[in-house]
Length: 219
Image (cartoon, rainbow, N blue to C red; front, side):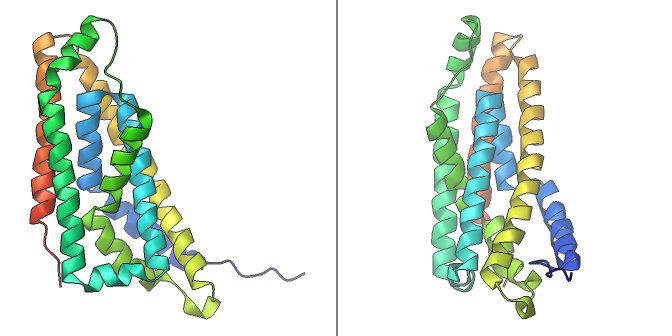
């Protein structure tokens, strides 16, 4: 009994996974944002942020699969507007983390951890994932190159390849978040160090926002 061909050829799938891995392991906006969140708010917030980032990134995959991604990739105005909106949001979150750094010390003194609404944290992660210039360019310019149009189901192929990327990112970013949150425990032993780590997390997000704003298009 003959078997039907796979949606994406094994060669294309492996090559895309390898390229995705190389891109993901190099810390970019999403990773640095997760680390900042882990240092400022702990493991739960970091992992929730990772999930949000992943969902945001997959929104970009869907956009590219439906043809919207090409508009972003080709339009300097649209790309710049999206990039600056994401940068401003990161700076806003960083300022908030910096201003609330003292609450970390109070929470640990009471035997607890600063908790925020999970849905709010998730939503903030989604916004950062959608506005990540590194991911926008990768999906818009690279993802379509791994689609075998002779096999048909072009949209489905893009969605599958995008899923592969996001699974790798989910695992990698989660590891970064757990490692950063573990280091945060060391800071919790000293009130002064704890306040410092909350400030560092905020400054990291502010610096990331500035970096994203300064990121230009390579065309």
